[in-house]
Image (cartoon, rainbow, N blue to C red; front, top):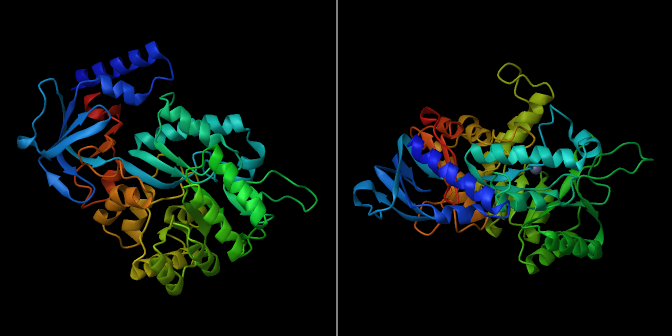
Length: 435
Ligand SMILES: [Zn+2]
């Protein structure tokens, strides 16, 4: 097996060397022999199937089923994955590849003091870590002051220049004028972490600009704090949010809203956004409305958990901060209301590659089962993010597959122990034991 994988990677390396960076990974996979993946079990996005195998041809899944019944072509190469469970590639619902943890450098300093070249160079490393952690797709929700750098980052990944997840990008994101950061003295105007807009005309123009330059989703900050440490307040009027969603929808793009206040969440929901990020102060009423309108919540529990520890919370020793108790109450209220949940951690606030943290916290501190978060990370996110070509192991879908030890439907720990990663039929990580 080691030889086989080495042989495959040599083939891929020579393909890249001959054809140059524009040569795509998908084309490389298409030239290889079909692969018969032989794990101990397959989690297909819904349930665990011990003894199943998967046949991959080119960049797609050709067949899946009980190993004994899977007819493989004569030239198929066997890839034994003993003791491992094969999963659909995990989908990160909320990342910022252009940010790094705030305990390394504050958000203000990243936006104001780091050059775009430095931020992009870092982002390439973040993309690689994300992929090797088993996250073969990520929704990246804003460059936070790095303009349209995510467009080129996505192109570099798609063209096989750097390894990384398939990206859904938001580009600059939209904030109400004066309602974001960084903020210095009132006398100094500094570059902001998102595009400032006020009124329908500016909103329509900015949405069109962002979509035309490559935004797959449009992100709006429906509320934010007006001063450092102050409370969040709704920042856009209902009319402004309505025109924003109508414009984006007309261009075929869903809208994602950052919102923590009940009123910000309510306005965003009424306007027709598809997902609400954070939702810290969500109430039973607003979650009922979200459920009625089919709006999903991406709670990003890992972000708040990290930020409060950066600010001095000694987790497990000090008392639980009010914000964490409130978060637990809001996530519980969302569940009671039957709101669909996107799994996404707001990665970048904490280290890229540590994406499993959100799933771990949901299981260990928020009362979810490992099976629930596993479904959210695969088929659930694929459905909510409109990605019908992935998130399940079915014939015809993209061969984005990862293998973890043990049974991840019973225990969340294996999600941090990804041993093998394939994206589009190309193997990016092999088990340590066989290297
Ligand atoms: Zn975020």
